[in-house]
Length: 286
Image (cartoon, rainbow, N blue to C red):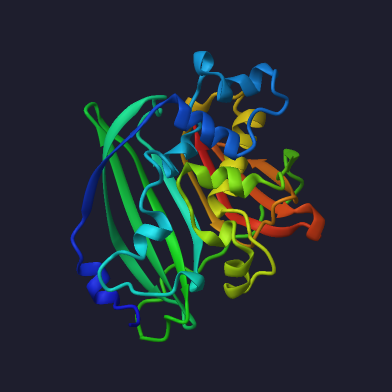
């Protein structure tokens, strides 16, 4: 059954309750490479419960993972092969800092379906709120190969490159060989990130890292390097997944301060000639 954009857009919102505690936060932080060196005071903010600060990108896995890619495929009108699906991008807006322990109601729905010719892109929006009010809003953009060409709107197509001039800071972050295996314990069990046979069926020679793992690693680098480790200063964060990352590679994270509380970021895979893996990446901060 092909993608039915009209049915997906007409489907009502889905709501549920999620909960998390410090162990979920710590596991997520370890999954994006926190804790190296293990006794560094800056890393202990992410790994030790008595000092725990929650990196805002934890919202993408809170409660075992919001709907995201897998959730988008369960929406009425969406019946496609998981092997033809990729996470195309993610945006996140924080309404207030995330607590290390919480319970929230999450509501999600497809807000847009774009026709890219050879593929379709679905936008799945999720809002989370607790007893004190809104916590976060995120948009997951899901790319489905072979489902375009039905005459729908193309949607946004601007792909801004890296800012001109030399970046203000450049850091490198190693991706462990087992990074995807550890990260998937936070909720995203897509076999693309663990099963070599499934990865080959999807067109990759071996399992790839979750885009949201690269997303989290990048935000942590920006917070640690430019925001003095103060996670509560992050207001919003968005990125487009421009290429894959393989476990065992090294990320090169380039950062440009833009003024007005904006940092532009570009991320490449060092071992493949700085091949782009995150583009259109922006962190807004206080």
